[in-house]
Every structure is written in C-alpha cells, then in structure tokens.
Length: 237
Image (cartoon, rainbow, N blue to C red; front, side):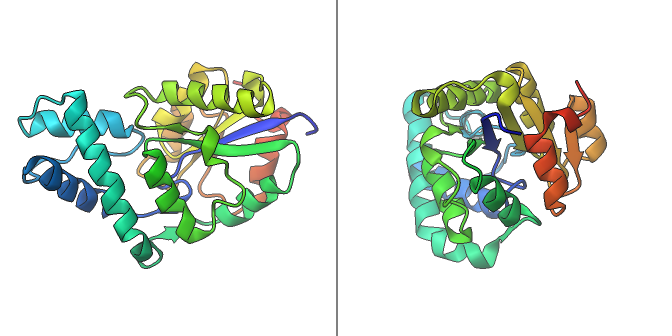
C-alpha cells in the first residue's frame, strides 16, 4: 500500500445524490439558450455532458453545432451556480463517502480527483455544499465538456495528474463509479474499476462490465479502502 495511487471519482449517484435536478437545469438551459421547450430528455447515468447535450439538441430540431453546445454549457453553469444554495436541501452525500474521501485524503501517497460527465464548474457546484472539495483536486479532473467518450475523460485526468504529481502507472489508477460506463472507461486504460451500487445499475451489471470490486455502497470504510489501496485483494481481472 506504499505505492502512489490516483483515485478518480464519478460524482452523481457515486458521491452525491441530486436526482431530478438535471432535468430542471437542462430544461431551463434549453429555454434560455435557444428558446426551446424541453420535450425529450436523454438518459444521464454514465454519460458525458457533451454526449447528453448533443442528443438533447438533435432531439429538439437543433443542429447541435459547437456554438449551440457551448451555449447550453454556459447556461448550465449559470443555472447551477444560482441554485447552489439549494443543494443541501435537494440532495445528500451518499453513505460512507465522507469517511472514505477523508481517509484517502489523509494518505500522502494518494491523489484524488474526478472523472465525471459534469462540466468543471458544475462539478464544483455539486461538491462544495457537501464538504467534498478539501481532498479532491478539481484541477486535474476529466470532465464531460471534453468528449462524448468517457474513456477520453480518464486519459485526460491521468495526463493532468502526471503533469502535476508525476506519472501514475495504469494499475495505480482507481476509477470509482456507479455505472458500467465508468467501469469500461477504467478498463480501457488498464486502470482499476470499482463499482458502487448507489445508482441505477445493479451490482450484477457492474460485475458483468468487468469491475474489479463492487460494493452496495461505501459505508464499509475499511473494505473500500482495502480495495482502493491494496490491489492484491481484488479479483485479478
């Protein structure tokens, strides 16, 4: 457990539950940016903001140009920042998250950041009200504005972490998320994938996607830390 470890967290339904707010934000962004009324909402879990926005615009008859995508992104940031004060009432930190993040943050050889479908600014909005920014370095995250392919987010985070902290071997990178997309993005780069069943996907589906370890939630701090820090305890995929 002395080796350096890069831990990359998903946000929604992995760290926090803000269910329902995404629809509100996209509805307002679509109206504000293009004067369109939301009539179709893409699926969110495991997907990036770029993929979701492209599908949303296409479904509403827009061309989904880069200009239109950026207009939606700008509105999403503005709306999220305006609603930040509501998030403690609208959402919650998921079981065990605060303890695991703090324990990992207390270890000098661990660096924590994000691989999330959210925009960078929205990520800050979602985590700040719940005290999750002290140990998570947002500067080296992989964000949903970058690509529709989640694996690109993992490589971006690994590259940024390497520039700031020195390189991390793929087997020293741990991606934690609640969807098969998170698992597959980790495996694409040879990283360790840990699935958590606090989202919309079953534990079985996370295992089938290839997760090295799966937890119903993160409430068993010691077991989660062992999976993150001691790769010998994993199932060897």
